[in-house]
Each structure stands twice: as C-alpha cells, then as structure tokens.
Length: 452
Image (spheres, helix red, strand yellow):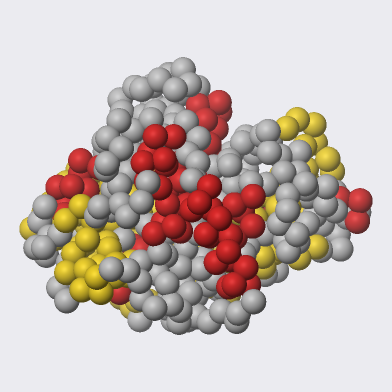
C-alpha cells in the first residue's frame, strides 16, 4: 500500500503507557454502523514480486506522517515523550525528523505505474493494502473516498481551489455547503484555512467538525486513490487542537458505544463505528490500556517472538491503520531477524534508499531497513502484550519475492528510524490484518481478538 497520508505533511508522536491484558470494557457486541472499506494498492506486484519503488514511497510517507504528529504534539503539549524539547533536538531518543523525499526516478516510475493501474479494474484479491471508505462533508453532503487512519487525528480533503495536478480527486466547495463555517489560520504551508462543517460517515454525523480543505498537495499524492484522510487518534496529535471526528460524534451522542473496530482482509473489510462486529471475530477481546495523552493508540510492554523465542521485549507499540508495514528501531529489528533462519539485510538494487535516508540525516546510507528470508520457510513472528500471542500470517509477513530471485522474499517488518527513538514500534496493516482490533475511547484501551 502506498501510505495513506501521501503528501508532504504527515503526522504523529510516541509516549509511554502502562498496559496489561484486561477484560473487555464493553460486554458483548453493541449495535453500530458498518463502513465497507475498499482496497486499492499494494507493495507486492501482480506477478508476486516485491515493489521496491512503492516501498521507498511508503517509508518516506511514514517518516513524514510521524514528523508532523511530533510537531503537533509538541505544539499542543509543549513536550515530546514527556520532556520539553526544541524542534530538531533529541531527548530520550525522540527527534522531529527532516522531511523525507523520494528520488525523481523512483517517483517517475510510480507515476507511470499509477496511470496504468487507473485504467485497470482493481480487485480485492490482488490489491489489499489501502483501506478507504466513503464520507460526506457539508449540506448537502459532498462525497469523498477517505482513508481511516488510527495513526493521526485530523480530517482533510482537497479544496475546490486546490492547485494540485491530482485532477481525479473529489474537492470540497464550501460555497456549495449551507453549513460551512470557515475558520482563520493555516493548517500548514500546504493547507488553506481550516473549516467547520457537518461530517457524516455511514449515518454517524458530527456537526461543526473541524477539518481542512487542502489548497496544495504533493504531486506524489496523485498515485493515492483516496481523496483524503480521517484521523481516529486523539486531540494531542491534531494540528487544529480540536476533537477528531469520532470523539466529536461521541460528545454529540451520534454513536451508541465509544468504540470502533477494524476488520482488514482481502475481502469484506470494514470499519465498525459504535462498538464491535462479533461476526468478524471469535472468542473474547483481549484489551490493553493506553495513555491517550500521547495522542496515539499506544500500548506498552510489548514482546516480539520468533517462534517461541523472545527476540525483543519491553517496547511500546502504536497501532496504526494508516501504515502498511511494521516499523521498528533499526537495532531492535536487527535483533528480531537475527532469530530468523536464512534472513539477511536486503541490498538496495539502486540508489533510492541512499537518497531517502540522506534526506532523513541517517549516517548509515547503506542500511535500507529491509530484510529477506527464504520464501519456502517464512518466519513465524508474534507480538504479545502479556496475554495471547498474536501471529503475523505467512501471507502478511511476505511483501513478495525479489525480481531477480523468486526463492528469496522480503519481510514486512522494517527497521527504520522514524523519530520515535529506540523503544517505539508502529504496527500497521501487516499486523492488523491478522486480528480483529477494537479501539475504546472511553476506557482508553485497544483490544485484539482472533478472526472468525
């Protein structure tokens, strides 16, 4: 998947939270609203080969997303990871990274590929890495295809005045909405004034919801099929310093339960607002506490195992539907793969990674953060927070085989410094596709259950 927030701004921070298995905060399934999610793009090509170019773009987007969130948290809270820091300074391992960019030749190849894909019908089986659904903004409602992102907190869509060349995207026209209320101030250098209007997601409505009509998008956003992003994290990460959509919906009584659930799969994916959908999972939900002041759905006390052997322990995890990969600190991911038989650091086939990492001020330009393993013996990797083992399936740990070697596959767990220091991992879709995940706003907890 091309990372959901594919423009030059990004989002998010990390902080510690105390976590332990807990009973489900809400007993039983609560009747809620189902939003079907579409799947559009992938880091695996149709021939089963690893898509190197799109992974470079994905990694840049992850860095930029969390760069913006760190900035937002610092502005809102005056601190990052609990300590006051000036921009671009390192404290306790946290750092606001410079903007990561993509080499021109890589972007050109992605653009050519996008034009080809836009002329083809896309199906669930071959493209399962962008989770987007429809919302409306304004009165009468203007329709947008939106990525739902638990790793950020703001809602944005292109404005009718957007100068981007992404002409295929829907655009918000405030003059066509009787309920629009423009607000002063710029969201960022890429955005225009933020606004307030009525936002509806499958019948769940929040009035006077803050959002931003974007007036300028990065050219690389043209390859992302969604129109914009709806953040589902907490206010600490908001550029607007306002409540995100779901929290607004809760305060206005638009949902019956203060939970939402994600089911991500090759077919039938859905976001369930106002509870959980027990037809998608079996057994009990295992909940873990989070600290919402961090802005993230962040669980502490994680352990990563290869088979039955613990490889990395005692780290924090951000559960992030807006990221494809599982991304951890380079040194810690190296420890994990050291326990995988036949694994090796992937040698970059070109200079793209060096360009990307140089932009991020990484001193080891030869380190791409990607690892390979024998395709016929994929690793069994699980995450654990003191309760059950949650395994990443064979299909979801594999990003595809090398173009030059169909017996060697690329792993979906990547070692990259994205600004969180040495103890925070971001668990994206490669993890979430293996479990049913519930996010409980009232109890400040994340729950996992086995898929049905």
